[in-house]
Image 1 (cartoon, one colour):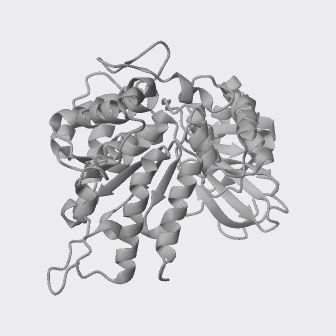
Image 2 (cartoon, helix red, strand yellow; image 1 turned 30 degrees about the horizontal axis):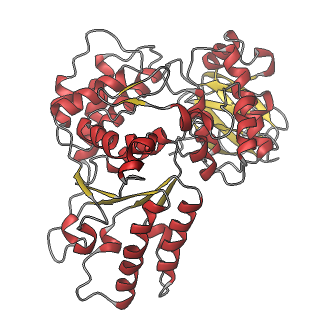
Image 3 (cartoon, one colour; image 1 turned 30 degrees about the vertical axis):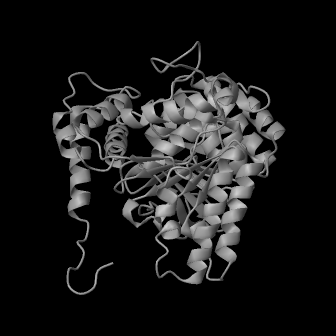
Amino acid sequence: MIRDPWFPKKYEPQKGVVVKSVVFAGDKWQIYKLFDEQNMLVVRHDLATQWDSNKLLNKSVWSRVKFGGDVLSFIISSDKYVLAPVDYKYFSVNKISALSFAAALRESRKILPNVSFENSLYVEQFSRLLPTSELSSNVDDGLLLGTWLAGGVPVPTTSIRRLQSLTPNFSLDDLEEIIEDAGLISDKKYGAATRTKTYASENNKPIGKNTTFSLPGAAYLEKFFFENVIDIALHPEKYEPLGISFPSPIILYGKPGTGKTYAVEKLAEFLDWPVYSICSSCVGSPYIHQTGQKIAAVFNKASETSPSIVIIDEMEAYLSKRDGAHDYKVEEVGEFLRLIPEASKNKVFVVGMTNLLGSIDPAFLRTGRFDHKIEVRMPNKDDIKTMLDVSLSKLPVEDNINLDKIIDTLIDKPRSDVAFIIKEAARLTAFKGKLKISQEELDAALQTRTMAVDATPKRNQIGFRP
């Protein structure tokens, strides 16, 4: 939601510069579209001074204006250059614009080696990423670049096969060139993550420089994925002589908010496998037979880029019991019955997700189609503590933080609430100009979350209910 503009429409901070509308806004900055279609970045003077002192953007490029009792600094950017927050998700990214962003990331990182650019403004005209907060974090440059290239989907550049599936306009050579131009290391042809991640079977610790697969706060699910998916995928030589060539399809079931989707995303990120989703919005069609055709097309695409993952989200919408169903519904169920057993042969890992396991057609619940049905539970006290400890370990935090109240409040609540509280506390810390998260910001974030829950409208209990 865009804040109220500092400048009214048609305001002229200097002659010939006429404000049209505000398009982006933060606590200390706003970006305007001008009537001549150029863009203007306006910041509070202390933020411009901070960028100047850090040698990111010299004060000589800024103009000044007094408005409403404040001294504001501004620069004008031609409309042929991007001027926007880095988390803006609607860029039209081609190779030239991607290389420009990579260069800005590289040059900015040379100047500021230890500050996260997660909450930055991208000023293409000056080839700079300008951080709007001094609060550092562990959002690395590879994740920042990958997310920008993928239009807002969080995928690191080490997961280059996943990244390519999300950026079909780029070849692998293009992506490797962009990654290297950003000053990041690119392991040629399919990325380091594909070949180097290996586990020690007994203690789930990585060997050498490899990265451990981890699901903080869901140890049982982490263990299941390691034993039934990861080890099979990474060590086929152990399993193929015994007739096991690929992980079998699974079902994750449980209440909304338990973290089913997040768990599969982390698995895909670790394995560096492309992900394809089957959901109502992506394959649903009002035309008979067309939904089945779209479902088959998803599986075909997954087979072409295997090893890969197909997620059947809200699978009860497609795989519900066939008693009394329309003919077209029976046809869709039949299509899945045909495709799922073939998927493993084509090295496609199928994950069904549902909140209503009892609604699924029994034909899919038998072993041979979905061999494992795993309940994903709401987090308990130990789960919440683990998630908070892991999240806070990546951020600057003051000593003597007490998390007991937060933990007690979040037991059996959606896992996303933990991420919200950490992010909100970090935002409040940055807004106050502080460098470390304190108890005050955590308590305020918890209060914000509580107010949001209390404000959620209750269902009308009168009449029919869905």
